[in-house]
Length: 102
Image (tube, rainbow, N blue to C red; front, top):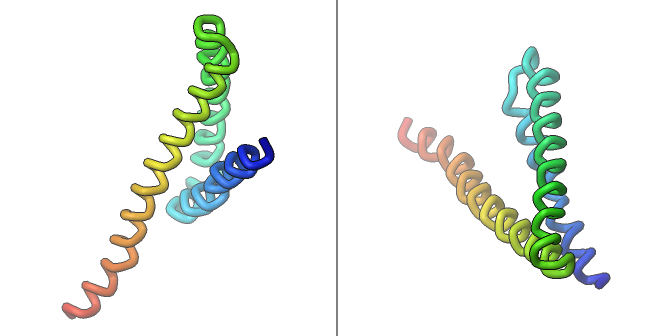
């Protein structure tokens, strides 16, 4: 069980890097309002997740619902991490290609 909690913490730690990258991509004048809007959206989606999780647990039972939620979360986090890695590599290499061509 401790190993699962460790994986969950490691999986959730991407949020810090994602929030920092998001804030840096915004203009200074739009940072506060945009970040507030995004945080509100996250809270709303988390609430919907709890509602859907409860409905699924009513149908298939709590242990299976928790397992399915974990599987969906792990799959989504893996897909997002892989796409971010590919995007990050392209963003890092783009200035080098432009500088070499100049």
